Length: 199
Image: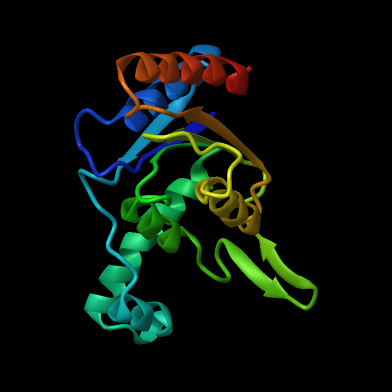
């Protein structure tokens, strides 16, 4: 099994979402000692955002790109290759202002490429990344599970379904900013959910 771990916290150290993603990956490896793990830390190595220059590069035919454009597209190509090679993707996803981090959004913008990871057909869009499992470890200061304020789960479910990935599993650690007891309970609950999700 090839595992791709995406750490999307803005923090390089002390990130609860990264710690829990590490725990989930460790659980997967324990179940499959031959698993290979690739870690992409978006705080240590942020993916560039999708700006006008990036769009121009992507929409220029490969054989007509400048060296600068080719280099920009190559950055996204690496991210896409990692996703394609993975059987399982584990994402540490903190909630920032009711959404995903800009780090994670930039990565999603990089891997969602027409004719490569999805395509449009006469009957509608078709995802090209089927057969994978995605685990998302969600960390939140408050409690938003199953409420209208939780925009992360619908967004991430929509994105990965669009790319052809139907097996998307969520682990929640909520109430992390609601005092030491609530934080400890949240981590313990998330650890139990990790065991259930992997099982």
